[in-house]
Length: 110
Image (cartoon, rainbow, N blue to C red):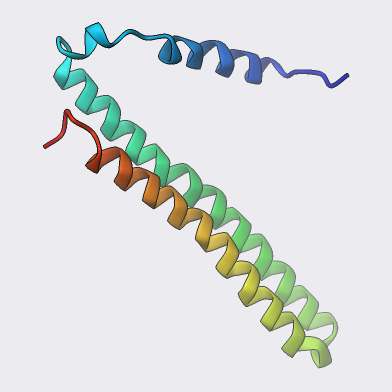
């Protein structure tokens, strides 16, 4: 049996209020809903960009270290690094797509 961390439990409890929220409050708090959507859109881009930046830095650092230790393998290491960086960058683009969906498909904005 896996142990559930306290942070995971808090996140589940905090997000359950959003899942069970009724639609009746949507009409009265339009400005609040716009602000929440804008914050969610910013977080949908910011968090993946932060994580991908850390991942890219670690990957490039590892590639540079590998090339410094074995210069003959620099071609294979470079190709593998570029493919890995492209896959990491795609995660940030997914966050951007989610952000655009939040902003464009929201009835409170526009």
